[in-house]
Image 1 (spheres, rainbow, N blue to C red):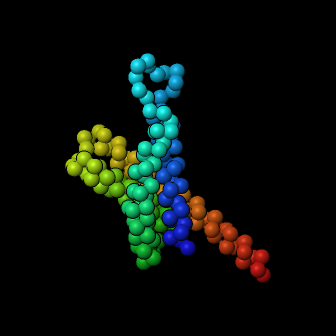
Image 2 (tube, one colour):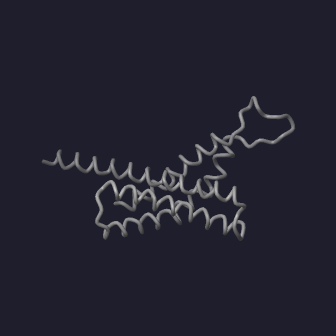
Length: 151
């Protein structure tokens, strides 16, 4: 059940992140210079999406399941678990971005660009966490509704 939520959450989170990135990085038509190539909104959306979905599925899904296993053995109140989970997801996102940069470039990126990319990885992981939690909440509401109707 929860694996299905995570698998469906990965592409949805990737689409959300890539839509925001495309919106931020697309130059408005009125501000474009002549004889200069600008990527369209669609190009700014599709190109990162091609990389984001596999990263969410290959790195995010197992890491998410690992965090779930970890929380089975941790005795904390609900709010502390949520905050700790968000922090762990953000650390995992930064680490996934580190692995991506290391794989693509064969080493560390420049300090400023690398820091921004690690922040992007953390925010992307946090979006994944929020989408997972949203689907889990909807799933729980549906189960409770079915239980009430069955009575």
